[in-house]
Image (cartoon, rainbow, N blue to C red; front, side, top):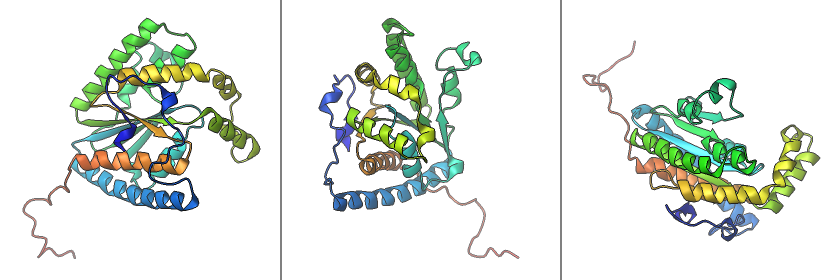
Length: 272
């Protein structure tokens, strides 16, 4: 899955990244079922590793999910984190900043939500909104955006040096796929609550968003906080990739189950 990792200081053209890619799994029912079976194994393993992370309480994980509307941020969380104990995982979604938050620097509210040791934190949208929607709509200048790129890198370096492993996923869908998903929301009464007419206005700015995403990821993909461009047209493959990378990151921590309390003889211990 390293092929989806954006190397630091790389030039990025999203047109060269196939959102319909499914790796070694063919776009057939058989390929889909094989990938889903592997994902089930990975989510089970993720649950085991998260338990070890929680028990040790020395490290943390931050997962950042970004992408266009309908790219599947909610679905990714629902699927990939299905085996994780909720007490060791927290999802945060950043909305428009409040008046109090606007009174501070743009990272103030984000730092407060960073995962504590032993936790997996998930940002469903994140601090990167402050260099995306703000730039696309001209609310901040390019000069401010470039300053924020540097500030974000410094912020993420601080988290990394404090024991947080950072995984940033851009869920890459095509404009055609987004159209189909928006139409599905309109057709399905159970999904209409997700529909927002504002999404149609943002869709008109697709090219502007792609340009902003390219600049953002090229500027902020680092060795300690890399961006992964995840093919997301096929939901089953999207989930497989994210689950696999999350498991790999936790396994690389090489955490072991903490030792039992000292001085207790478990062979002779009786509970009455």
